[in-house]
Image (cartoon, rainbow, N blue to C red):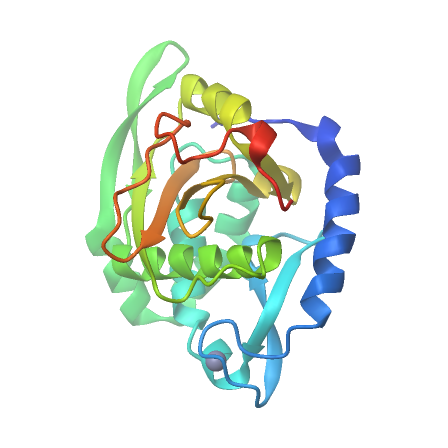
Length: 256
Ligand SMILES: [Zn+2]
């Protein structure tokens, strides 16, 4: 069971380290919850959720300030994303590790979750040894998964663009099975970044004239991909790959 898409681009790690230091420094000045704005009982929320990573944890994980109350309410959504992404039929070795060592134990602990997964199993065709065969994949609690992806986007907006107001935007999530063509197009057009190598790769393209409009692309375990688009309420939807004049190309992705 191998990932079908080659999405590796590890030669940029020096850039990431420099950018990370700047963003982490900026983050220390923000002392309110990134979801509700509370200044009480602040903790940190990991973007993406910590449960997506296998040990040893990467040193450069992104965290944003989050109040205890909001943080407590996120656990089930985080688990849903972990099960959904690692239960995909074409995940990397890290994805398989998460499925075996974390997702299955989450399922064992919760009969309700288990029942939901049973309902959500479906067969997908895969090519194996030159023959088409089928494997089970999980489509689970899409609304929960969407909630995590939108929340992640808010956290990444705060981390990378702390001056942009992200709370009152319209967010739209779309799931795609990545193809080599899509991934190649993303590298050419958008800013690329990653955490934990193949655990979480992400691209962003924000409108140069108004960063409240943009597209983020997330790939988990080199298998499952999601687009999250955002725009000011009542605005025109952003297009992918710079087709829309407002979405910046890699060169104009200022504010990294
Ligand atoms: Zn909060």
